[in-house]
Length: 437
Image (cartoon, rainbow, N blue to C red; front, side, top):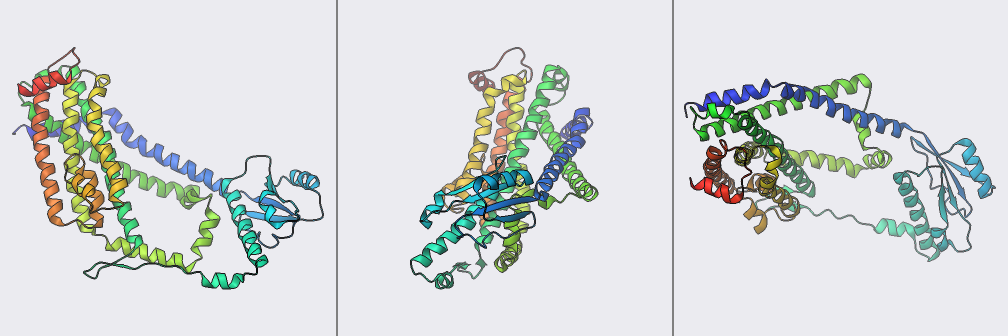
């Protein structure tokens, strides 16, 4: 393995000095930041838009339920016909007209409410109006039936079941959400990293193979050394690029939002009014405190260490398969027939994590898939925040490491033969013959 460090260095320097690599390293964060800022700017413009909605209530039942907000003003119309109201709203260029038609039966109001506007109204605006009307009509029906609304409101009860382990550790629903968020982010990050940089390794092998440079290199280097060098060198280049993306993207967003005066909080508005109302609720403040407490309750040290090991192990495992595919074909088009067996375990791992780990992180399905090496990097990372015994993590990583060693041997068999094969599209039968050589 004396040549391995030299191969790693060569692969790393070749990648980071490549013009397209350098351009994408610095251009990609600019594109992403520009996209985020454009969305934030457009959302801010939309949220700052002043909307005036005219209300023509012929029943009088809905008096007092329409309260003005920061960006929405309600104008009550009276003693005016519907046609006149429409003309008035058009002339004033209001956002729209809400009409509640008079009917002898209040129960029929639900089918007598209409909203008139030049353009299609915002769904959040319509939803807000519907909720206001529904609440008032429900109260009116209760009054007609002789029900005391005050007693009903006083009798409403919210139950928040406290959670505690047998060892005395207290948890909450917020803890589960926080664990799910961290596990999902770790699994998804690994999934994307494998897809992006695994393909980079595969293309690198194909380029060297088609350029015949590999014939010179292979004369003095063992195929397994060359393959490992490519995998590790390209991985280091990928980590370097990813670190620059995160650093540069964070700096650009911070600086540009300050210069342009764009608030990133505006990204969550069409429901800004609802969020503002919710934040005034004391229960929301308690939830925020619980969220912070839940964050510090996470096994952060375990998460960081496990993330590093499983991330590296999972990436190296799949990278060796990508390198073998690159050695078996002459061009990227021919790789499609071999990509499905590689991608399917990753997709399966994500689906198991989303639909099984969330519901039962310590169930049979979740546990089994966290030991299967082709799914364990994703599934185990999603299980760890919920509390996985150290022995299970060690055993899972040991199986993953052993599978990587076997996969490298397996892939090297294909690599050493396929890297010198040209002009023929290999089949699975031929790959099996290569492995037997």
